[in-house]
Length: 294
Image (tube, rainbow, N blue to C red):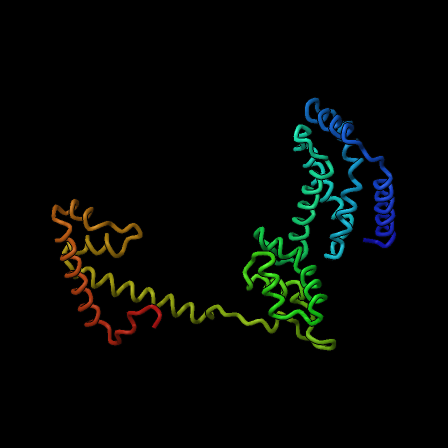
């Protein structure tokens, strides 16, 4: 963005904030009247007046989250969405001030925005982790001030107990908050030509290993098929249905199909497996070659 556009956006934002903070505060009766008019009659003017009066609340809450490195304007926009959601759900009959009700929606919208955009790595996927994310720094500072020593393992245990979260979540969050995202294309060292991605290791199998594994798998399949053809037709049916099918049949179902008891099916299956084992051992020079992970 050109500098003049950036400056213009900052001036517009400052003007919006000044205007929001100068809006007249509403009395309880006024906000109830506007809320009912919007809810019952769909009066857009009432909604706009209600929103304008409490945009100052959005600005106030946005300043509390400005230390997370996200633009103030974006926080205000997300908070305004939360304010609109509050206006659409507010029930005057519950005898609660709109500002109290709207604060929860505004804060929630901003927190969700921060969690989505603070890092490219997803942070705070559960309610407990979300609470930990937004309270860790405050609790850490309080513990350091009260103890007069650097934050240590005892401090992490105290945070875990205070927020009712596992200790490993506290350790993970501390490491996440102490490190910022970095590009894999960033140079290693000031004068280095290498990038960080050049030093990443690939734990996947090499193309050569994949080809060998695929060839070995085909060979084992051929051995099993050849041994299977040496069995009787009934034994083949049992082995295919019990051992070579994704939807394996039970002994009872096979017994019904073959007209024998399930115990007889079990005996035939064991006999067929012993035959196949003998045939395979007779054909294969190294028995370990039969194992996929050998």
